[in-house]
Length: 276
Ligand SMILES: [Mg+2]
Image 1: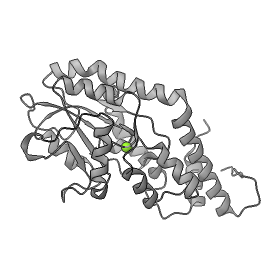
Image 2: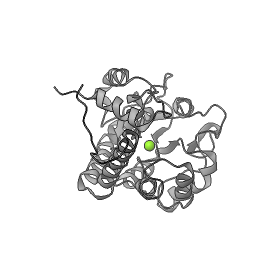
Image 3: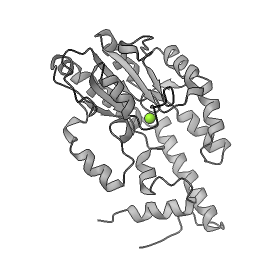
Image 4: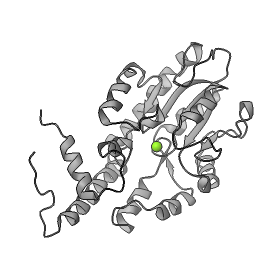
């Protein structure tokens, strides 16, 4: 394995790895905030969703949720979306980590950011979800934001014009389902998808992370092979948004071990590269 200095300055190996992690985050956040390519990718995703909405509504056997195991033909239609980097753009929060926390994730800074309820919609998200709601589709927001962020999150969605139903079928409460709002609602989103699928026919899943589609705390190869069975669902039943800033794709490269030093994480990523 070739090794090389990514940041050839007079820093310790750990210092270089930390500096490189900051540069990675800078690049990803700059891409989201400034590139036409990011905006176009997001618009393209939501346009795909709009193009398959008619068929999804008409075909009563159509479902997008693997948790939908019972006959759903008579159930009302729903769409499940993730929140962060799917319908709300948190790149300013990422920029705060870069500028105020030396590139490190900070729970305090994150909660300051979400408490301001000022995240802008991801391009195209609001328009698609409004169009779906106008067709009688209930939009469910399944997010791993915590209960302490609940009020500010709902306020952000409502103030930016997203359709947020206050009552839904079968005693589920409102249409925002956050981690920990019920004991069984863990960070694995499948119990919440199952709760929706028991009451609604799920037309689409929309997210920026593989966990928004199925439980994906798996090795990179297993993530890829399991997802391949659903290649024909992307852009129709499963709508994926670009997010280069963070995600389980990255954690999978180092077995979800966030205690590892940045230098070790960088070595694992280098080992994962192919040169042909
Ligand atoms: Mg997300």
